[in-house]
Structures are given as structure tokens and as C-alpha cells.
Image 1 (cartoon, helix red, strand yellow):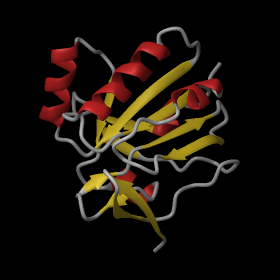
Image 2 (cartoon, helix red, strand yellow):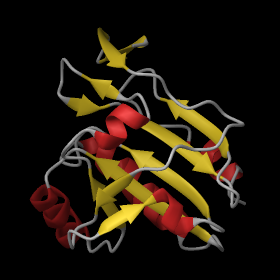
Image 3 (cartoon, helix red, strand yellow):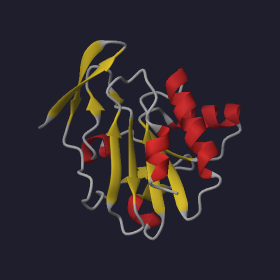
Length: 163
């Protein structure tokens, strides 16, 4: 298993697993949405997909990240944003209700996505903050593992692949 070191508020933490490489086919996965319906990446074949991964929706940076991509995606054609976290279904539902956001929120209770995309932070029992952009044919165009988990991702760079 591959390990990568990132930081959280300056302290080194370890991300376990191998992330998919840009230029390759994005690995399929299936997670449940807030209605407990299974949602797979392959369900969106023919659309551009941005996968926004965050450690904890109940923190400031995760909140900012999710709201920003939700706002930005309104003007993007043939594009879907998949928000992935290992927060509980209830946490994600409560956040959406509080913010008035109707987004695709997927909960990774069994670490399916964490394992498939190599994003597990064992010390925190959380997913690492990251972004993936996938083209209509399923090719991974862009990937960012945020090196300091208390910082926001590079929104402009990720969104440039969708415009």
C-alpha cells in the first residue's frame, strides 16, 4: 500500500492507498446518496463529473468547499458534482437542510471510495480533502490531493477543466 504525507494544521498525517492517475480511466465506485439509493460513477457516463471529497462537512473549510462547488456548478452544462465524505447520512442531511443545498451527497460508510481512490487518513478516520475531474468518456482529467487539509482546494484549476 502506498502512503503519502500531508499536513493538518501543520502536523504530518498519512494518506493510505494509491490514487488513480490523470489520463487513465477513473475507477468506478458505488456509494449511497441521502435517499439511500446506490449511486455509481458509471451512472454519469456522457457527463463531466467533479468529485469533491472532504473530511468533515461540519467544519469550516469543508463547508466552504461544498458551497463553492455547488454555486459554481449551476452554470456548467452537462456536468455533475458528486460530494463524497465519510460523514454519516444524518450529518450530510442536516448540513444540506441548514444550507438549503440540494446536491448529490454520497456517504462512504464502508470506505469503498477511500480504498478505491487511495484517500484514507487512518489517524483521523477520515477521507483526505481532494478533487477529481472526469471527462465525458470517463478519463481522469485532473486530480488534487490538498497538501494541507485545513486549506481549500484550487477551485479555479479544477473548474477550468469543466468550462
